[in-house]
Length: 102
Length: 230
Ligand SMILES: [Zn+2]
Image (cartoon, rainbow over all chains, first blue to last red; front, side):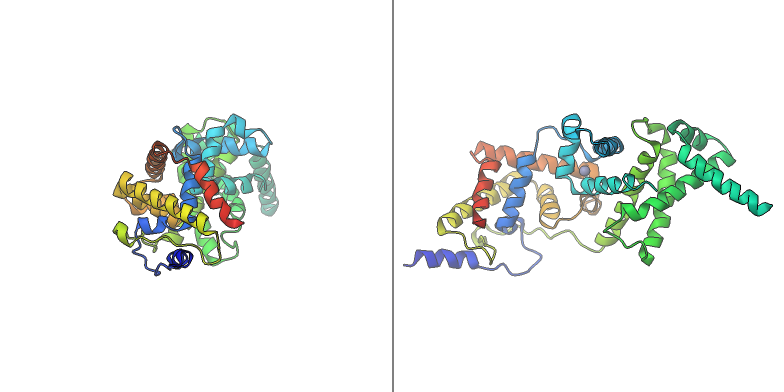
């Protein structure tokens, strides 16, 4: 009868905090769906791998530190750093180091 | 006299360290005996001085953990530098190249320590019947938006379960849902980070292509979720 209430009930259902929750269950969380969509939005047919980015990272960091336009000069490295948390973290640490010469 | 000589040599070391060109670093590290030892010891000092910056915000430089990590990182970095010396192409300062290796060692070691005891999420594909979308408690979007979102989430779920292999689902869940580092997921799945990136890239491409084939475009659908904030 009260459709609105029914929908509300449906959405307020709380997933029990179990670690065995499957993937399907997880994707039903709007935050997770958003995360997946955001990731897919950035996805390109051709991307550099972590190893390829690592090979260029010192050069990329120095170019950034000099204020060069890396978005234009090395767009694929920049894209990888947006997608890959591991590489992004390493890049940020490297920037910290080279901007504070020991 | 000995003290004076020592002072001089410390000063010389500092000078030579700051003034070594890329070519000098390479030559010294490829030399035998004292030249090489001096270069290695300068490099080691450089790595140890840079680590607090590399790990700033992640590990307190005054903690005991930092000390043990620093020794290990310096050692491993020097070994890697010597091993890969021939791959240095001179596209950056030699010291930046060394820092890059040190940073990777340091963060890798830190990740290992932090995630060592965290298992991969268990994968149990539930029946579609007991899947129910849920909203975050503090959000009150309109019923229309909730219904629209519900539809999108159901479709994403279906595509994930139809399109991906078990390995791909596990990787997606670990990296995206659990926010585990790629390197740690790779290690736990018995592969390496580069292969794991490729696997994730394939996973993303498969999802994206299938969604687009069904007329779902990520940027457009994201707008449905953005509405929630209002
Ligand atoms: Zn990466």
